[in-house]
Length: 168
Image (cartoon, rainbow, N blue to C red; front, side, top):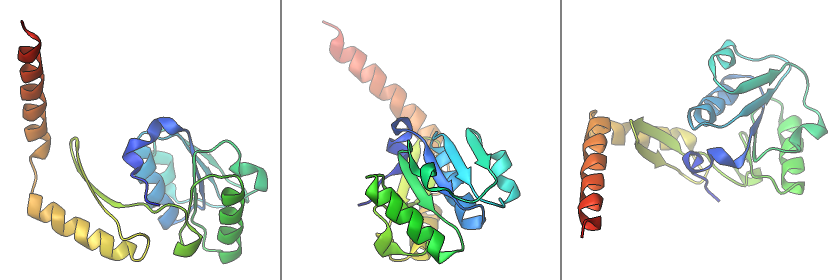
């Protein structure tokens, strides 16, 4: 299953287990989408401090950490911890992305390109995040910038059209 994270920020909080660069990239995507984040790791990269709506708990993961979250990402560099987090999430019916094992994940995160409200996502079903990033970068290069302004103009034109349609 693939979930476009931009559509779910009201669904609840995201648990990020891990504090390294992979965890930070995932956390940054969820933070940008408006999610509340709860990060658990004995050591975390300094970039977590810059993410809004983020609570960091510098300690080892505990089984009880999975409760109450809408999504979970297992992003440690310890295979056994990632496997355990994934198993617990699946037992609780919580969608989980296990960074080091595609087959243990129940959702995959697309590589996203944003220009204002324009959002383009590229996914590979977890097969190759690096390839998804490469395709995203190529699409972004092809599109160029300026879409935020175009979308604002299109939004205004649509409002005006809808208002004209309502006028008797």
